[in-house]
Image (cartoon, rainbow, N blue to C red; front, side, top):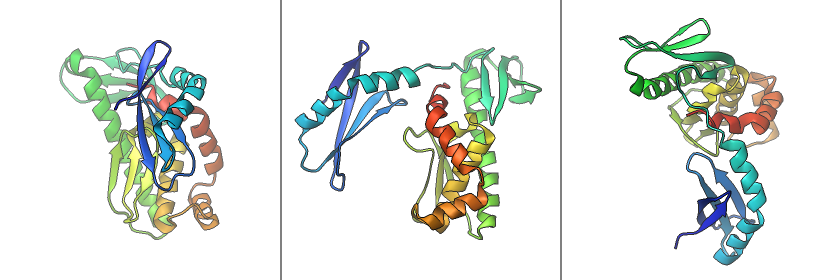
Length: 228
């Protein structure tokens, strides 16, 4: 059975799942999928969960307003890339996407502009993340395994028990030091698969300003979903 909630005149799907180890109800607005996710403890009823969603209606409306101001990747738009602002310029003709001063030049047919700039941004993210992860893994004498990029809505990065790292490509829109912190955070998990004092000491070793970057993500991280 499908469930929805009406907010600001828009009907949002409510995706419900039960988690056997969850001790409380958890609600999140997922901006990429434009739905509400609700996690329930094993013995909490769907009816109780939907009542909880109704209680959080004002909070959800604020979340949607905060995260739903789209920034189109179109000609003339200014976007941040690793802390620097660039103006997107469609130039036509043949060639590859390139940086010219404070502009990003996108050749080709205008109808393919969005796709080409997205592909370019993801390549930049992969290149810089790989470089940072390699350097930080060397700092703690740990080998790197696979690095993947995704378009996630709940995590900026993750580290599997096998040591494989995954990151949101949208970190390309964050300041450079914030990207560096997220990469350092996940690399530190290769050494410590927890959030112990030893883990945070390792993060501090490879990212001295990590507390400032964590704060930036809490305050401004939602804006990274605006682009595209």
